[in-house]
Image 1: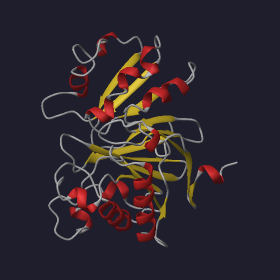
Image 2: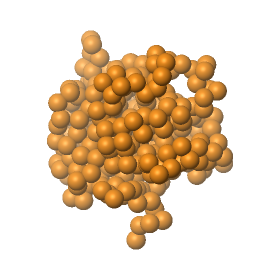
Image 3: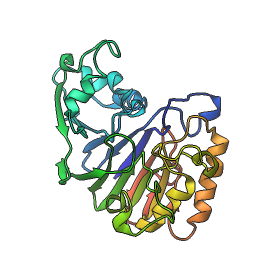
Image 4: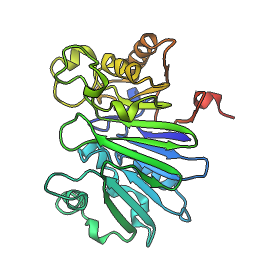
Length: 290
């Protein structure tokens, strides 16, 4: 299984000279299996460049949305595959208690927020309200469940090629917990991430920043590290970088996570444009690939 990071930033796109190495586009991860099944996780601004890389003769594309905050869907209207006549596009994501995914997305893909309506897209579009039973996308078995974040939000667990990738982009498992982590049955996202070969996890804040942002739906380095250790993840990639953090700040937070998990879990950088290979033995970084 290969994972390519097309967008790693959270909350707001932040391109600039000080975010070049880790990236300024918001959340979007491409996952490909050995059989070339394609699954896209979230549709932040990074999905624009991803769409340009998908050939016209691709059999289909499946986009799994974690939730509908703007940093996770803002690139959707610029996703090239949506404008290809008859091209099969499947959008998966959570409904609310009162509205389907289609109705919720139509509020964004319509005037005055966007000039093209969801119903007018020329692609062969299918929308799926995700439930809590596993579903198959080609050779990928996907499962999801609600996680701790404002508004209906899900995390995803993808299993293919004998390995597991867990995506918890926006996640605050320490909310309301005095001693973190609590027992597994009380930990948001635990089952999704248990013994994942690669855990892509929200690591937005420092401890100092979190003190004034409790309840905003995100994790500190300490929370993410404790969660990765508790679930027994083999590798962990910090994700959903704060828009105010430059590359130097992310270097320091990555080093902090690596030191805390030394000998227990591989810590890898999630850098925009990088492709990593998830294997049973560990995650291969770009420098390790032929």
